Length: 190
Image (cartoon, rainbow, N blue to C red; front, side, top):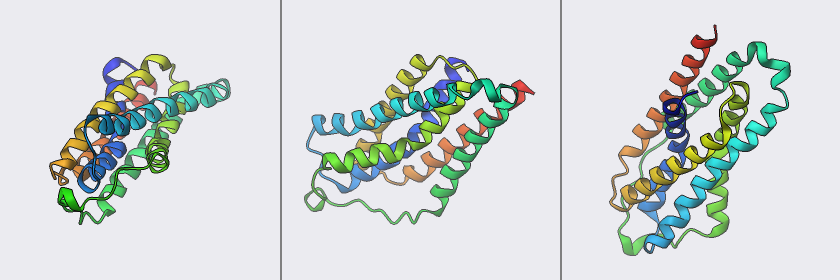
């Protein structure tokens, strides 16, 4: 995978964290830049670590599946992409902007950890596929973490400004990006 493909994969993977960031920005009190950095840092960190863990797991099986690894990559990326799109379409987006004085308290560390893990599980699967197509994992994980961090900063701010209408569209776009990259890997290897 080249830089652009890894970047687009990072954008696709970050959409769940983006959506959660928008929701948190719209519904919780986020007192200043340190709180925003904490939230976005947690999402970025887990989006970076999970592909690395997936890559480590996948590297152990690569020698057994190398002849059909491109199908595995296509299947994983397409499945995740379809799942993200399906979840976005099924959501009941009745979220509205809550006035600042009525928003919930700041996100607890436990809840932030749970959300960061939940939004990065797909990244583990992508990491497995990275092992099969010989991605430079250190560069990929750094890029994924940075892209997620930056996108989540935007998400929190969008939520704070009550622009929650973008959340569903962003998730659908993320799913489409993953499917397209999966198709590209498949076509190149056939």
